[in-house]
Length: 246
Length: 246
Image 1 (cartoon, chains in turn cyan, yellow):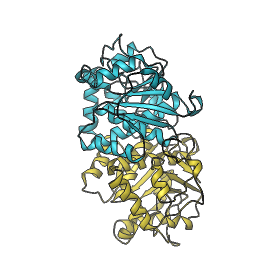
Image 2 (cartoon, helix red, strand yellow):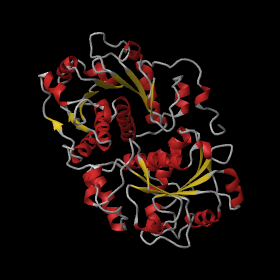
Image 3 (cartoon, chains in turn blue, red):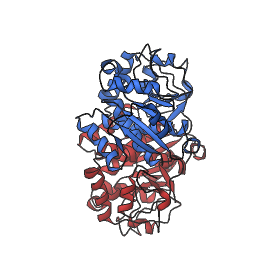
Image 4 (cartoon, helix red, strand yellow):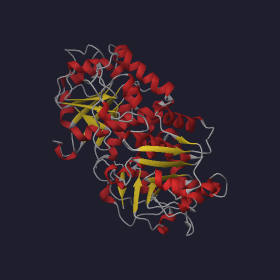
Protein backbone atom coordinates (compact mmCIF):
# COMPACT_ATOMS: atom_id res chain seq x y z
CA UNK A 1 0.00 0.00 0.00
CA UNK A 2 1.55 3.23 -1.01
CA UNK A 3 -0.07 5.21 1.80
CA UNK A 4 1.45 3.57 4.81
CA UNK A 5 3.75 0.83 3.64
CA UNK A 6 1.85 -1.55 5.90
CA UNK A 7 -0.99 -3.93 5.35
CA UNK A 8 -2.38 -7.00 7.05
CA UNK A 9 -0.32 -9.37 4.92
CA UNK A 10 2.79 -7.86 6.53
CA UNK A 11 1.87 -9.53 9.82
CA UNK A 12 4.61 -11.72 11.18
CA UNK A 13 4.63 -13.78 14.31
CA UNK A 14 2.04 -15.04 16.74
CA UNK A 15 -0.90 -13.10 18.20
CA UNK A 16 0.23 -11.00 21.16
CA UNK A 17 -1.47 -11.25 24.57
CA UNK A 18 -0.86 -7.85 26.10
CA UNK A 19 0.08 -6.99 29.67
CA UNK A 20 -1.70 -4.51 31.91
CA UNK A 21 0.96 -1.87 31.17
CA UNK A 22 0.61 -2.38 27.42
CA UNK A 23 -3.21 -2.15 27.61
CA UNK A 24 -2.96 1.16 29.46
CA UNK A 25 -0.26 2.51 27.13
CA UNK A 26 -2.34 1.55 24.08
CA UNK A 27 -5.44 3.34 25.36
CA UNK A 28 -3.37 6.36 26.38
CA UNK A 29 -1.90 6.59 22.88
CA UNK A 30 -5.37 6.39 21.29
CA UNK A 31 -6.74 9.12 23.55
CA UNK A 32 -3.77 11.49 23.77
CA UNK A 33 -1.83 11.10 20.52
CA UNK A 34 -4.55 10.03 18.09
CA UNK A 35 -7.12 12.27 19.85
CA UNK A 36 -9.85 9.65 19.93
CA UNK A 37 -12.66 10.68 22.26
CA UNK A 38 -13.89 8.45 25.08
CA UNK A 39 -17.44 8.75 23.75
CA UNK A 40 -16.19 7.71 20.32
CA UNK A 41 -14.20 4.70 21.61
CA UNK A 42 -17.05 3.45 23.80
CA UNK A 43 -19.49 3.79 20.89
CA UNK A 44 -17.18 1.90 18.50
CA UNK A 45 -16.39 -0.90 20.98
CA UNK A 46 -20.01 -1.30 22.12
CA UNK A 47 -21.16 -1.58 18.51
CA UNK A 48 -18.41 -4.09 17.76
CA UNK A 49 -19.38 -6.18 20.82
CA UNK A 50 -23.04 -6.27 19.74
CA UNK A 51 -21.92 -7.49 16.33
CA UNK A 52 -19.82 -10.25 17.96
CA UNK A 53 -22.85 -11.33 20.04
CA UNK A 54 -24.92 -11.72 16.85
CA UNK A 55 -22.16 -13.85 15.31
CA UNK A 56 -21.88 -16.12 18.36
CA UNK A 57 -25.67 -16.30 18.88
CA UNK A 58 -27.64 -15.46 15.74
CA UNK A 59 -31.36 -14.78 16.34
CA UNK A 60 -32.34 -18.10 14.70
CA UNK A 61 -30.31 -20.28 17.11
CA UNK A 62 -31.56 -18.78 20.38
CA UNK A 63 -33.28 -21.51 22.39
CA UNK A 64 -36.04 -19.33 23.85
CA UNK A 65 -39.04 -17.98 21.98
CA UNK A 66 -38.18 -14.37 22.79
CA UNK A 67 -34.65 -13.18 21.84
CA UNK A 68 -33.93 -12.00 25.39
CA UNK A 69 -30.45 -11.06 26.58
CA UNK A 70 -29.46 -9.82 30.02
CA UNK A 71 -26.69 -7.21 29.88
CA UNK A 72 -25.01 -6.67 33.27
CA UNK A 73 -23.12 -3.36 33.39
CA UNK A 74 -20.49 -2.32 35.91
CA UNK A 75 -19.80 1.22 37.14
CA UNK A 76 -16.92 2.12 34.81
CA UNK A 77 -15.96 2.01 31.13
CA UNK A 78 -16.70 -1.72 30.64
CA UNK A 79 -20.24 -1.02 31.83
CA UNK A 80 -20.64 1.89 29.39
CA UNK A 81 -19.52 -0.40 26.55
CA UNK A 82 -22.22 -2.82 27.77
CA UNK A 83 -24.85 -0.05 27.54
CA UNK A 84 -23.87 0.70 23.93
CA UNK A 85 -23.82 -3.04 23.17
CA UNK A 86 -27.39 -3.36 24.50
CA UNK A 87 -28.56 -0.42 22.37
CA UNK A 88 -27.17 -1.93 19.17
CA UNK A 89 -28.56 -5.38 20.08
CA UNK A 90 -31.98 -3.70 20.22
CA UNK A 91 -31.57 -2.38 16.66
CA UNK A 92 -30.60 -5.94 15.62
CA UNK A 93 -34.04 -7.08 16.92
CA UNK A 94 -32.80 -8.75 20.10
CA UNK A 95 -34.56 -7.95 23.38
CA UNK A 96 -31.89 -6.74 25.80
CA UNK A 97 -32.60 -6.07 29.46
CA UNK A 98 -30.01 -4.10 31.43
CA UNK A 99 -28.90 -4.50 35.03
CA UNK A 100 -26.81 -1.46 35.97
CA UNK A 101 -26.79 -1.25 39.77
CA UNK A 102 -24.06 1.33 40.36
CA UNK A 103 -24.60 4.20 37.98
CA UNK A 104 -21.79 6.59 37.19
CA UNK A 105 -22.33 10.29 37.78
CA UNK A 106 -20.14 11.06 34.74
CA UNK A 107 -22.19 12.88 32.06
CA UNK A 108 -20.68 10.68 29.38
CA UNK A 109 -22.00 7.51 31.03
CA UNK A 110 -25.30 9.18 31.94
CA UNK A 111 -25.88 10.03 28.27
CA UNK A 112 -25.30 6.42 27.21
CA UNK A 113 -27.82 5.39 29.90
CA UNK A 114 -30.44 7.87 28.71
CA UNK A 115 -30.05 6.59 25.12
CA UNK A 116 -31.02 3.10 26.34
CA UNK A 117 -33.86 4.34 28.55
CA UNK A 118 -35.33 6.44 25.71
CA UNK A 119 -35.20 3.35 23.48
CA UNK A 120 -37.41 1.57 26.03
CA UNK A 121 -34.79 -0.99 26.97
CA UNK A 122 -35.90 -2.30 30.38
CA UNK A 123 -33.61 -1.79 33.39
CA UNK A 124 -33.80 -4.30 36.25
CA UNK A 125 -33.87 -2.73 39.71
CA UNK A 126 -32.28 -5.83 41.24
CA UNK A 127 -30.70 -9.08 40.07
CA UNK A 128 -32.70 -12.15 41.17
CA UNK A 129 -30.73 -14.18 43.72
CA UNK A 130 -32.67 -17.24 42.57
CA UNK A 131 -30.56 -18.03 39.51
CA UNK A 132 -33.21 -20.27 37.97
CA UNK A 133 -35.22 -17.11 37.26
CA UNK A 134 -32.32 -15.79 35.16
CA UNK A 135 -31.81 -19.14 33.40
CA UNK A 136 -35.51 -19.21 32.50
CA UNK A 137 -35.92 -15.60 31.39
CA UNK A 138 -32.86 -15.03 29.21
CA UNK A 139 -31.01 -16.80 26.41
CA UNK A 140 -27.66 -15.46 27.53
CA UNK A 141 -25.92 -12.94 29.74
CA UNK A 142 -23.48 -10.25 28.59
CA UNK A 143 -20.91 -9.65 31.34
CA UNK A 144 -19.89 -5.98 31.11
CA UNK A 145 -19.23 -5.70 34.83
CA UNK A 146 -15.52 -5.15 35.30
CA UNK A 147 -13.30 -5.74 32.26
CA UNK A 148 -9.84 -4.28 32.71
CA UNK A 149 -11.08 -2.40 35.78
CA UNK A 150 -11.20 -5.70 37.65
CA UNK A 151 -8.46 -5.10 40.18
CA UNK A 152 -9.83 -1.88 41.60
CA UNK A 153 -13.38 -3.20 41.95
CA UNK A 154 -13.48 -6.93 42.38
CA UNK A 155 -13.98 -7.12 46.10
CA UNK A 156 -16.51 -4.26 46.32
CA UNK A 157 -20.27 -4.43 46.31
CA UNK A 158 -22.39 -4.68 44.23
CA UNK A 159 -19.83 -6.39 41.97
CA UNK A 160 -19.04 -9.18 44.43
CA UNK A 161 -22.71 -10.21 44.68
CA UNK A 162 -23.16 -10.06 40.92
CA UNK A 163 -20.14 -12.31 40.45
CA UNK A 164 -21.59 -14.76 42.95
CA UNK A 165 -24.76 -14.94 40.85
CA UNK A 166 -22.94 -15.14 37.50
CA UNK A 167 -20.89 -18.09 38.76
CA UNK A 168 -24.09 -20.09 39.34
CA UNK A 169 -26.09 -19.41 36.18
CA UNK A 170 -26.25 -22.07 33.48
CA UNK A 171 -27.09 -20.00 30.38
CA UNK A 172 -24.07 -18.86 28.31
CA UNK A 173 -22.07 -15.86 29.50
CA UNK A 174 -20.39 -13.52 27.03
CA UNK A 175 -17.64 -11.49 28.70
CA UNK A 176 -16.37 -8.18 27.35
CA UNK A 177 -12.57 -7.91 27.32
CA UNK A 178 -11.75 -9.56 30.67
CA UNK A 179 -14.19 -11.94 32.40
CA UNK A 180 -15.38 -10.21 35.57
CA UNK A 181 -13.42 -11.22 38.62
CA UNK A 182 -10.42 -12.30 36.55
CA UNK A 183 -7.03 -10.66 36.90
CA UNK A 184 -6.08 -9.03 33.59
CA UNK A 185 -2.82 -10.97 33.50
CA UNK A 186 -3.23 -14.11 35.59
CA UNK A 187 -6.94 -14.88 35.10
CA UNK A 188 -8.84 -16.64 37.88
CA UNK A 189 -9.21 -20.41 38.00
CA UNK A 190 -12.10 -20.11 40.49
CA UNK A 191 -13.89 -17.35 38.60
CA UNK A 192 -16.69 -17.36 36.03
CA UNK A 193 -16.22 -19.42 32.90
CA UNK A 194 -17.68 -17.53 29.93
CA UNK A 195 -18.69 -19.44 26.80
CA UNK A 196 -17.72 -16.43 24.65
CA UNK A 197 -15.00 -13.86 25.19
CA UNK A 198 -14.77 -10.64 23.19
CA UNK A 199 -11.30 -9.08 23.46
CA UNK A 200 -11.36 -5.33 22.91
CA UNK A 201 -8.67 -4.20 20.45
CA UNK A 202 -6.18 -6.87 21.59
CA UNK A 203 -6.37 -9.93 23.88
CA UNK A 204 -5.06 -9.45 27.39
CA UNK A 205 -2.60 -11.90 29.00
CA UNK A 206 -5.38 -13.62 30.99
CA UNK A 207 -6.92 -14.91 27.73
CA UNK A 208 -4.18 -17.57 27.74
CA UNK A 209 -6.21 -19.16 30.61
CA UNK A 210 -9.51 -18.95 28.68
CA UNK A 211 -11.08 -22.31 27.84
CA UNK A 212 -14.50 -21.20 26.52
CA UNK A 213 -15.95 -22.00 23.09
CA UNK A 214 -15.54 -18.77 21.13
CA UNK A 215 -13.01 -15.95 21.21
CA UNK A 216 -13.52 -12.81 19.15
CA UNK A 217 -11.38 -9.71 18.79
CA UNK A 218 -13.37 -6.48 18.33
CA UNK A 219 -11.83 -3.24 17.16
CA UNK A 220 -10.92 -3.11 13.51
CA UNK A 221 -10.68 0.69 13.79
CA UNK A 222 -7.35 0.34 15.64
CA UNK A 223 -4.76 2.24 13.55
CA UNK A 224 -2.13 0.09 11.83
CA UNK A 225 0.73 2.05 13.37
CA UNK A 226 -0.50 1.22 16.87
CA UNK A 227 -0.87 -2.45 15.88
CA UNK A 228 2.72 -2.35 14.63
CA UNK A 229 4.13 -0.45 17.61
CA UNK A 230 2.65 -2.89 20.12
CA UNK A 231 3.45 -5.87 17.83
CA UNK A 232 -0.12 -7.11 18.18
CA UNK A 233 -0.02 -9.41 15.12
CA UNK A 234 -3.82 -9.30 14.89
CA UNK A 235 -5.53 -11.69 12.46
CA UNK A 236 -7.03 -10.22 9.29
CA UNK A 237 -10.58 -8.95 9.70
CA UNK A 238 -12.76 -10.45 6.93
CA UNK A 239 -14.49 -8.13 4.41
CA UNK A 240 -15.72 -5.08 6.32
CA UNK A 241 -16.33 -6.99 9.56
CA UNK A 242 -15.50 -5.13 12.75
CA UNK A 243 -14.85 -8.38 14.64
CA UNK A 244 -12.78 -11.47 13.88
CA UNK A 245 -13.10 -14.92 15.42
CA UNK A 246 -9.97 -16.80 16.40
CA UNK B 1 -41.44 -7.66 20.46
CA UNK B 2 -42.41 -7.41 24.06
CA UNK B 3 -39.92 -4.62 24.79
CA UNK B 4 -41.26 -1.86 22.62
CA UNK B 5 -44.30 -3.10 20.79
CA UNK B 6 -42.64 -2.06 17.54
CA UNK B 7 -40.57 -3.86 14.98
CA UNK B 8 -39.67 -3.44 11.36
CA UNK B 9 -42.55 -5.59 10.18
CA UNK B 10 -44.91 -2.94 11.58
CA UNK B 11 -43.87 -0.54 8.82
CA UNK B 12 -46.76 0.74 6.77
CA UNK B 13 -46.70 3.10 3.87
CA UNK B 14 -44.11 4.46 1.50
CA UNK B 15 -40.62 5.69 2.37
CA UNK B 16 -40.72 9.29 3.59
CA UNK B 17 -38.57 12.03 2.02
CA UNK B 18 -38.12 14.50 4.83
CA UNK B 19 -38.24 18.29 4.70
CA UNK B 20 -35.59 20.64 6.01
CA UNK B 21 -37.64 21.26 9.14
CA UNK B 22 -38.06 17.54 9.77
CA UNK B 23 -34.31 16.92 9.29
CA UNK B 24 -33.49 19.60 11.85
CA UNK B 25 -36.16 18.39 14.30
CA UNK B 26 -34.89 14.81 14.00
CA UNK B 27 -31.29 15.79 14.76
CA UNK B 28 -32.42 18.03 17.62
CA UNK B 29 -34.36 15.15 19.16
CA UNK B 30 -31.35 12.82 18.89
CA UNK B 31 -29.02 15.36 20.52
CA UNK B 32 -31.30 16.88 23.15
CA UNK B 33 -33.80 14.18 24.12
CA UNK B 34 -31.84 11.00 23.41
CA UNK B 35 -28.56 12.66 24.54
CA UNK B 36 -26.52 11.40 21.60
CA UNK B 37 -23.21 13.24 21.37
CA UNK B 38 -22.06 14.99 18.20
CA UNK B 39 -18.82 13.00 18.30
CA UNK B 40 -20.82 9.80 18.61
CA UNK B 41 -23.21 10.65 15.73
CA UNK B 42 -20.39 11.72 13.39
CA UNK B 43 -18.46 8.52 14.19
CA UNK B 44 -21.51 6.31 13.57
CA UNK B 45 -22.49 8.04 10.32
CA UNK B 46 -18.92 8.19 8.97
CA UNK B 47 -18.49 4.47 9.63
CA UNK B 48 -21.82 3.72 7.99
CA UNK B 49 -20.87 5.79 4.91
CA UNK B 50 -17.55 3.93 4.54
CA UNK B 51 -19.48 0.66 4.66
CA UNK B 52 -21.84 1.93 1.94
CA UNK B 53 -18.85 2.90 -0.23
CA UNK B 54 -17.49 -0.66 0.04
CA UNK B 55 -20.88 -2.04 -1.01
CA UNK B 56 -21.14 0.26 -4.04
CA UNK B 57 -17.48 -0.16 -5.01
CA UNK B 58 -15.91 -3.33 -3.57
CA UNK B 59 -12.10 -3.42 -3.77
CA UNK B 60 -12.20 -6.08 -6.53
CA UNK B 61 -14.24 -3.94 -8.96
CA UNK B 62 -12.14 -0.76 -8.80
CA UNK B 63 -10.76 0.01 -12.27
CA UNK B 64 -7.37 1.33 -11.14
CA UNK B 65 -4.49 -0.73 -9.80
CA UNK B 66 -4.36 1.20 -6.52
CA UNK B 67 -7.64 1.41 -4.53
CA UNK B 68 -7.48 5.22 -4.39
CA UNK B 69 -10.40 7.37 -3.28
CA UNK B 70 -10.49 11.15 -3.04
CA UNK B 71 -12.58 12.35 -0.07
CA UNK B 72 -13.49 16.04 -0.35
CA UNK B 73 -14.53 17.48 3.02
CA UNK B 74 -16.37 20.72 3.65
CA UNK B 75 -16.03 22.96 6.70
CA UNK B 76 -18.98 21.67 8.73
CA UNK B 77 -20.55 18.43 9.94
CA UNK B 78 -20.77 16.80 6.49
CA UNK B 79 -17.00 17.28 6.18
CA UNK B 80 -16.38 15.71 9.58
CA UNK B 81 -18.44 12.68 8.53
CA UNK B 82 -16.20 12.56 5.44
CA UNK B 83 -13.08 12.47 7.64
CA UNK B 84 -14.46 9.53 9.63
CA UNK B 85 -15.50 7.83 6.38
CA UNK B 86 -11.92 8.18 5.07
CA UNK B 87 -10.49 6.71 8.29
CA UNK B 88 -12.69 3.62 8.09
CA UNK B 89 -12.00 3.23 4.36
CA UNK B 90 -8.32 3.03 5.31
CA UNK B 91 -9.00 0.16 7.71
CA UNK B 92 -10.92 -1.54 4.86
CA UNK B 93 -7.66 -1.43 2.81
CA UNK B 94 -8.69 1.39 0.48
CA UNK B 95 -6.27 4.27 -0.08
CA UNK B 96 -8.15 7.47 0.74
CA UNK B 97 -6.70 10.91 0.12
CA UNK B 98 -8.41 13.87 1.78
CA UNK B 99 -8.97 17.39 0.48
CA UNK B 100 -10.12 19.58 3.37
CA UNK B 101 -9.45 23.18 2.40
CA UNK B 102 -11.38 25.04 5.09
CA UNK B 103 -10.60 23.48 8.43
CA UNK B 104 -12.89 24.00 11.35
CA UNK B 105 -11.43 25.43 14.56
CA UNK B 106 -13.86 23.29 16.57
CA UNK B 107 -11.92 20.81 18.79
CA UNK B 108 -14.33 18.05 17.80
CA UNK B 109 -13.50 18.45 14.11
CA UNK B 110 -9.80 18.98 14.83
CA UNK B 111 -9.67 15.65 16.67
CA UNK B 112 -11.23 13.84 13.71
CA UNK B 113 -8.60 15.49 11.50
CA UNK B 114 -5.70 14.43 13.74
CA UNK B 115 -6.97 10.83 13.74
CA UNK B 116 -6.65 10.82 9.92
CA UNK B 117 -3.27 12.56 9.91
CA UNK B 118 -1.85 10.16 12.50
CA UNK B 119 -3.06 7.26 10.33
CA UNK B 120 -0.92 8.65 7.49
CA UNK B 121 -3.86 9.44 5.26
CA UNK B 122 -2.53 12.05 2.78
CA UNK B 123 -4.11 15.51 2.71
CA UNK B 124 -4.02 17.50 -0.56
CA UNK B 125 -3.02 21.12 -0.17
CA UNK B 126 -4.99 22.09 -3.30
CA UNK B 127 -7.45 20.49 -5.69
CA UNK B 128 -6.05 20.22 -9.23
CA UNK B 129 -7.99 22.50 -11.60
CA UNK B 130 -7.03 20.16 -14.43
CA UNK B 131 -9.75 17.57 -13.86
CA UNK B 132 -7.96 14.93 -15.92
CA UNK B 133 -5.44 14.65 -13.09
CA UNK B 134 -8.26 13.70 -10.71
CA UNK B 135 -9.81 11.28 -13.22
CA UNK B 136 -6.42 9.58 -13.63
CA UNK B 137 -5.40 9.41 -9.98
CA UNK B 138 -8.56 8.21 -8.24
CA UNK B 139 -11.20 5.54 -8.71
CA UNK B 140 -13.92 7.71 -7.23
CA UNK B 141 -14.65 10.85 -5.27
CA UNK B 142 -16.56 11.05 -1.99
CA UNK B 143 -18.42 14.37 -1.84
CA UNK B 144 -18.62 15.38 1.84
CA UNK B 145 -18.55 19.07 1.04
CA UNK B 146 -21.90 20.51 2.03
CA UNK B 147 -24.67 18.01 2.79
CA UNK B 148 -27.59 19.61 4.59
CA UNK B 149 -25.47 22.71 5.21
CA UNK B 150 -25.78 23.54 1.50
CA UNK B 151 -27.87 26.65 1.76
CA UNK B 152 -25.60 28.58 4.05
CA UNK B 153 -22.45 27.74 2.13
CA UNK B 154 -23.11 27.11 -1.51
CA UNK B 155 -22.05 30.46 -2.88
CA UNK B 156 -18.95 30.84 -0.74
CA UNK B 157 -15.36 29.92 -1.50
CA UNK B 158 -13.74 27.44 -1.45
CA UNK B 159 -16.95 25.42 -1.93
CA UNK B 160 -17.94 27.18 -5.17
CA UNK B 161 -14.60 26.30 -6.82
CA UNK B 162 -14.78 22.71 -5.58
CA UNK B 163 -18.26 22.35 -7.03
CA UNK B 164 -17.01 23.72 -10.35
CA UNK B 165 -14.37 20.96 -10.41
CA UNK B 166 -16.71 18.18 -9.24
CA UNK B 167 -19.14 19.07 -12.05
CA UNK B 168 -16.45 18.32 -14.63
CA UNK B 169 -14.91 15.10 -13.36
CA UNK B 170 -15.80 11.81 -15.03
CA UNK B 171 -15.04 9.29 -12.28
CA UNK B 172 -18.01 8.34 -10.06
CA UNK B 173 -19.05 10.71 -7.28
CA UNK B 174 -20.53 9.41 -4.03
CA UNK B 175 -22.42 12.14 -2.19
CA UNK B 176 -23.12 12.06 1.52
CA UNK B 177 -26.72 12.96 2.43
CA UNK B 178 -27.31 15.85 -0.02
CA UNK B 179 -25.21 16.27 -3.19
CA UNK B 180 -23.16 19.43 -2.75
CA UNK B 181 -24.76 22.46 -4.33
CA UNK B 182 -28.22 20.92 -4.18
CA UNK B 183 -31.04 22.46 -2.20
CA UNK B 184 -32.13 20.00 0.50
CA UNK B 185 -35.72 20.14 -0.72
CA UNK B 186 -35.71 21.14 -4.37
CA UNK B 187 -32.40 19.65 -5.57
CA UNK B 188 -30.52 21.36 -8.40
CA UNK B 189 -31.00 20.36 -12.03
CA UNK B 190 -27.75 22.12 -12.99
CA UNK B 191 -25.71 20.67 -10.11
CA UNK B 192 -23.45 17.65 -9.80
CA UNK B 193 -24.90 14.26 -10.67
CA UNK B 194 -23.56 11.66 -8.23
CA UNK B 195 -23.56 7.99 -9.22
CA UNK B 196 -24.16 7.00 -5.58
CA UNK B 197 -26.10 8.81 -2.88
CA UNK B 198 -25.91 7.87 0.80
CA UNK B 199 -28.82 9.33 2.75
CA UNK B 200 -28.01 9.82 6.41
CA UNK B 201 -30.73 8.41 8.69
CA UNK B 202 -33.55 9.34 6.25
CA UNK B 203 -33.68 10.60 2.65
CA UNK B 204 -34.26 14.33 2.21
CA UNK B 205 -36.90 15.73 -0.15
CA UNK B 206 -34.28 16.49 -2.85
CA UNK B 207 -33.66 12.75 -3.30
CA UNK B 208 -36.89 12.66 -5.33
CA UNK B 209 -34.83 14.46 -8.04
CA UNK B 210 -31.94 11.98 -7.80
CA UNK B 211 -31.32 9.91 -10.95
CA UNK B 212 -28.01 8.20 -10.06
CA UNK B 213 -27.39 4.46 -10.00
CA UNK B 214 -27.38 3.59 -6.31
CA UNK B 215 -29.14 4.98 -3.28
CA UNK B 216 -28.28 3.80 0.22
CA UNK B 217 -29.68 4.77 3.60
CA UNK B 218 -27.11 4.76 6.41
CA UNK B 219 -28.04 4.90 10.07
CA UNK B 220 -29.49 1.72 11.48
CA UNK B 221 -28.81 3.06 14.99
CA UNK B 222 -31.78 5.46 14.64
CA UNK B 223 -34.17 4.59 17.51
CA UNK B 224 -37.48 3.01 16.46
CA UNK B 225 -39.53 5.62 18.31
CA UNK B 226 -37.94 8.40 16.23
CA UNK B 227 -38.59 6.40 13.05
CA UNK B 228 -42.23 6.08 14.13
CA UNK B 229 -42.63 9.70 15.24
CA UNK B 230 -41.35 11.05 11.92
CA UNK B 231 -43.19 8.30 9.97
CA UNK B 232 -39.98 7.47 8.10
CA UNK B 233 -41.12 4.00 6.92
CA UNK B 234 -37.50 2.96 6.46
CA UNK B 235 -36.80 -0.33 4.69
CA UNK B 236 -35.57 -3.25 6.79
CA UNK B 237 -31.80 -3.34 7.27
CA UNK B 238 -30.51 -6.82 6.35
CA UNK B 239 -28.76 -8.97 9.03
CA UNK B 240 -26.57 -6.65 11.07
CA UNK B 241 -25.86 -4.26 8.17
CA UNK B 242 -25.71 -0.58 9.07
CA UNK B 243 -26.76 0.47 5.54
CA UNK B 244 -29.58 -0.59 3.23
CA UNK B 245 -29.79 -0.16 -0.53
CA UNK B 246 -33.07 0.97 -2.07
